[in-house]
Length: 248
Image 1 (tube, rainbow, N blue to C red):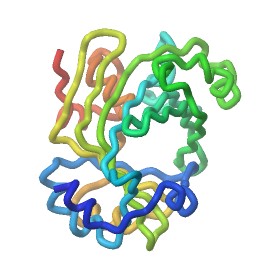
Image 2 (tube, helix red, strand yellow):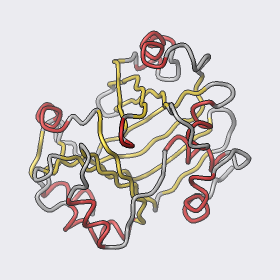
Image 3 (cartoon, rainbow, N blue to C red):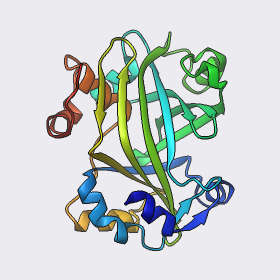
Image 4 (cartoon, rainbow, N blue to C red):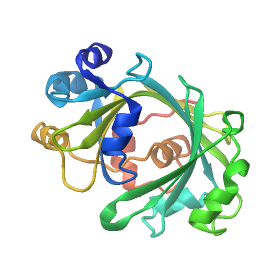
């Protein structure tokens, strides 16, 4: 149903989407839904939207590798709600083969700033080629960074002309702990995210009206907490109990 709905929407190319709604500094609101809930809302949620279309594709496979210190500094800063939180990952757009090294940091008023650099696809498990870029944004403070967690999912990206915002829908969510053998697959879970300059968009108001509220979820931190239950997981405890069941 998701693919059929996307096919009915007007397309928008990547260049136009970037020009009209790059939103590298933005306010993100995330929602966790079951597939059945998403299907019920799709007609209203996508009304007036344009779907990112690249070469005829509208549902794209993303593969990310998250990097952290041996002490899991990035994870612990998020789990314990500390200041100066950061996230370092490579993101591979599997359909095109393009790969980026991305650094996410806190921006003002609860927002997120994302900076990125083209990265060699064959080195998606190694931050070394772009370590100078990471240090330029974070300083040498994090120390050694190694691959900790891999994620894999499919994403649809929508442009909402009325609010000049983006809406993403992530399905087919999978995680793999790179420090062991634990994996997690949640085929019935959907993550919907709105990306705005600040104010809530029409998609937010629709989700609120149907009882869906923004929730704290990080594909890196929440996934790692599910796969390593001994880690502190206060911000995601209810979410983990309700939706995440790791399988060894």
